[in-house]
Length: 44
Image 1 (tube, rainbow, N blue to C red):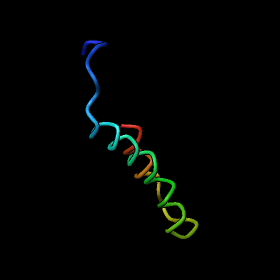
Image 2: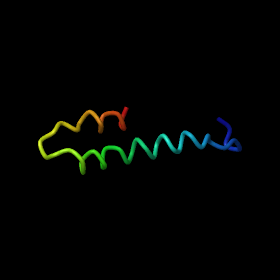
Image 3: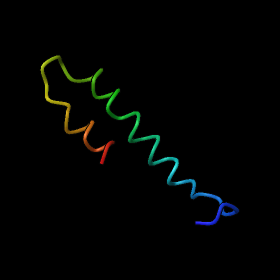
């Protein structure tokens, strides 16, 4: 990718979603539920 080229907007949206989903899942699921899979998705 050239530095003059702009990144795709959907890429920024995808990265934002992958960042927010683990935090929302922590609020929704009760303590003790295995949420590590959602965190793993954001890392991979």
